[in-house]
Image (cartoon, rainbow, N blue to C red):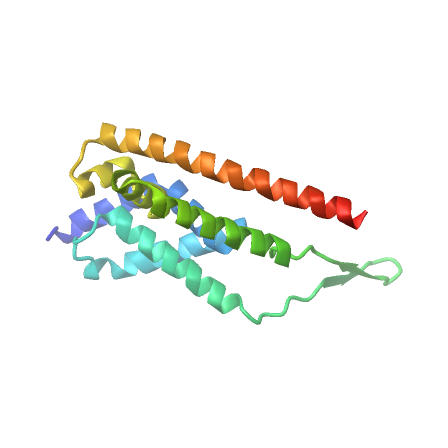
Length: 195
C-alpha cells in the first residue's frame, strides 16, 4: 500500500496524462462534448474524494477509467425524462419575443438502429478472432488500456501486443467493409424502389 502523498501524486499524474483518453471515454458514453467535460470534472472530484479508499489492486488509470464510465452512465440516467424547453428572449426595442430552437442532439431512430447493428457486428467479429488477437483488442480497444498495460496483464511483450492489434484491426476492417458494402447495396436498392 502506498503512502497518502504517493497515492495523491499517482492520481494527479494519471489524471493529467490520461485526461484526453478519459474525456474520449466520457464523450463516447454521453455523445455530447459539453456533457463529457462535466462528467470528467465530476469523475475527477469523485476519484479525489475516494483516494483514501484506493487499494492499489488496479492501476490508477484503470481505476480512473472505471470512475469516468460510471459517472457518465449516472449522468445519462439523470438525463432520462428531462424536458428541454426552447429559449425565448424579448428584444429591447419593440418587445418582440424571439424563440431560439436548438436541434435535438440525440440520434434519430435509424441512426440508433444502425449503431446497435454495428456494435453487434463488431462484437460478433471480435469473438471470431483468434484468442491472442481477441485478448489484445478487448483490452486495448474495448477496455481502453494502453498497450503497455495490456502487455503486462497478458504477460507478453509490447511489440507482440502491437502486432496483434494491427492484425486484428486489419481483419475487423475487412469484415466491416463487407458489411458496409452490403448495407450500401441494400440502401441503393431501397432508394431505387421508392423512386
